[in-house]
Structures are given as structure tokens and as C-alpha cells.
Image (cartoon, rainbow over all chains, first blue to last red; front, top):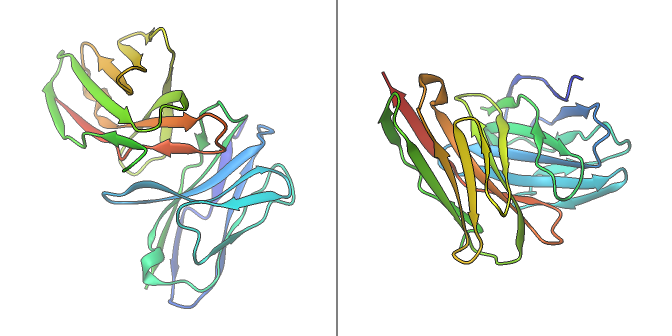
Length: 112
Length: 110
């Protein structure tokens, strides 16, 4: 199993550009989430999904959109990149409510 | 108040030492608990779940104290390879998401 696959691994954007971070899992997990991790702040939840067609906001959703058209894919869209969005982004999936997450290897995003 | 709080450390211990981390949680409705390990510039990886009766996996022991609302992780006979940041994670009853602590950094020194 590949687990959770994130692309790209690294990205540099200019302020105002948009882009999509891709996330795919092959474990048939219902729950998927996007986190960002910044020094000293731990993992902060951006958006999450409990199944195809169902998404909800997390702690820091502003500036990001998500959709979940299939069980496997959960892309994260940055609408208009800002330097404050410079971070490491992790996608994660889990089997159900009482299970822990499996994380992707992360995307390091720099906005200049 | 944060849902989950951890001492950020750092903990610097010699090889072979025993080290323990605690993590407190604020919501008594918390029902599932985990410890994750995160190496520098890597993703968090599940280390172990924490069960009510306590559980052990090799040199690692996890315990839950519901009365005092904390979980602990004990590492015996520390190895250099144990150097990492350890994150505690809590799931609330009926909640759709997990709450992560900010992590405790451990460095094992030769």
C-alpha cells in the first residue's frame, strides 16, 4: 500500500497565486484532513472530511478550499497565496472516528 | 484553554536512561488517545494507542489516568534513534477530529 500520497513535496509561490495541493489515499479511509504545521504552534486543522461529498472547516480555514468528490482524493486549494500561508502542509486519513491518522509526507510551501 | 497540553521540553537524556512524558487533556469526554512520533522534517507517525488499562510495546509504555486527565509515555533504555518529537493526541467522544499537543522534544545523547 502506498498509504497517503501528497504532491508536490516542495512549492514556491508568489503572493496572489493560486494552487492546489494534491492528496490521495489507497486505504479506503472515510476520514481525511489537512493540517498545517508551523514552528512552535503544532498541527492546526484546516479542513476535514468524513466521507465523499462531506467537508467541514477546522481551526484555520481562511484562504483555503477543499472538496471530496471521491473517497480517495482530498485536494486543498489555496485561493490567493499570502506569505502567512508559508508552512508545511500535511494530509492525513483514518479509518474511522476512533482511529489515529496516517499522514502523508508533507508539502513544504513558501510564499514570497 | 488548549484541549491538549504538553511540556515542550527539550528533554536531553543519556543513552540507556528512562524518560517519561506527560500530556494533559481538558475535556473529560475524551475517549481515544494516541502517541505519535515526529522526526525532524518528517510527517508524524503513530507510535502507539493508549488503552485504559495501560499498554506496552517493547521499551515503550503508555498509560492513561482518567481521573487526573492525563496520559503518559515511558521510554526505557533510551536509544539514539529515539530522538524525536513526541505528540500526544486526543479524540473527544462524538467528535470528528483529533486534537494534537504541540509535542515534546527528546534528544538522546551518546
